[in-house]
Length: 272
Image: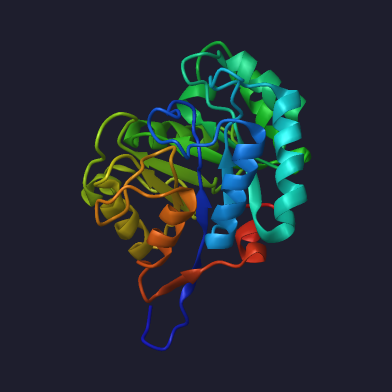
């Protein structure tokens, strides 16, 4: 970017609960629908323009329940309005097979959804079924973001694009650095991902994950932060809540970036 070029928009997504952590990990981690809505509202007020949410059962377990997902999306849209894009997860979390994930997606019909490529590419679905599901998302204007955990996932997604299974020539992707329960690798871990799309986002686990986010922002990526990935701010202190993490990240974005507006975020992530 030349010295006179304006800063480019950066989408900041909040992931307030995820599939695995619970109240024992942090008392402000949202579990119930009302808690999730309030946590998301705080994130939007702190500057997030995308919300990545997981439905939890009353006992705290991650569930793929289409009725509950639709109800959560509707509740969020009532409170948040057009200030943020709401993204539903299809994460298996070790509990669901690919056909169950596909059936959930068709039944829930969310406005936006995340799909882990390694999960939806499992052999329980044929290539034809996989292509049919993704084509259905395109027809129904469901904004897709593919989750990639390593370079092999990125290569597999690229192969699926070239074979026509994935209908988007430049799919929107999320690079995940590190794993739940482990500290994230340093920023160099981003180098392991071959470019799989023009629009990419990064998230990272653990206190060291902030270096990954900083590197992603400088390299033109978008960011996801929240209790799904960790509880610590960049200076090592434990965040009060998810909104605290959002503020912490926005305070560090480089000079060549600026927070995306809600309309920009929808366009960038494929939800017109």
